[in-house]
Amino acid sequence: MTPVLRLENVRKAFGRDTLVLRDVNLDVAPHTVTALIGASGSGKSTLLRCANLLEEIDDGVIFLDGEDITDPGADADAVRRRIGVVFQAYNLFPHMTVLENITLAPHRVHGVPREQATRRARELLDRLGLAEKAGAYPDRLSGGQQQRVAIARALAVRPRLLLLDEITAALDPELVGEVLNVVRDLKGDGMTMVLATHEMGFAREVADQVCFLDDGVVLERGTPEQVFGDPQEERTRRFLRRIVEAGRL
Ligand SMILES: Nc1ncnc2c1ncn2[C@@H]1O[C@H](COP(=O)(O)OP(=O)(O)OP(=O)(O)O)[C@@H](O)[C@H]1O
Ligand SMILES: [Mg+2]
Image (tube, rainbow, N blue to C red; front, side):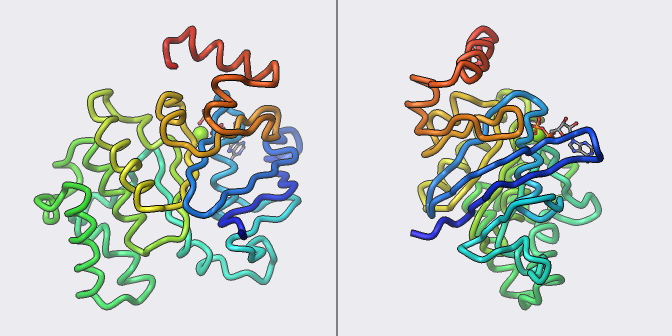
């Protein structure tokens, strides 16, 4: 089966001195969840940003559904329409209601008729337990609610792939669960996702594939049982030991 996302020998440096992704290879099969783990600065966010063409790679190839999206002739807007992204900071527009935030891209950017965009947005809000908040402004919502709106916004264009970058990192502990529940639900729907996370327990539970990034490569990959339960690389073991010592696994 063609992977939804494939990175082949991807290299990304910032300036002359910071080589972040040295030689990254990654396959994401349809309807699977991939968790990217690794120390702070190991390149998880950079990898996600490259996959969404927010950063230009220096070498290698990225395929979306078998199509080379790093080809200079590729239509970046069309690619981004097929990839939903949610970041740690929700980045909602403060002067727009929840509903307007969600319909903005489909209606204004992608030309979906307003009525249809609104129907889809209400459907999503309903699913995410936010039906009551359609007319509210973001500053009246809790962090967990804002993050769920950000997820709804990413889903509004019916993406093929969802990239989630530390989406619970900015949340108070008691709000983390409600956002993780949404991810569980999406997995149940068969949504293909790649998530960068420090929530190891969650990665272990929800991921089909865990990738440990270290020194610019995917040093180790496998099922959660393999990577968390029986890591093969010394550096993976050291990383996990620190996580366990910090009480985070
Ligand atoms: N725009 C940029 N310009 C220069 N350096 C950058 C830029 N973006 C990221 N970097 C550097 O790239 C490296 C990887 O950063 P990245 O944000 O991808 O790490 P990360 O694995 O997501 O870390 P964290 O777990 O803290 O989120 C870091 O050394 C960072 O300083
Ligand atoms: Mg990051």
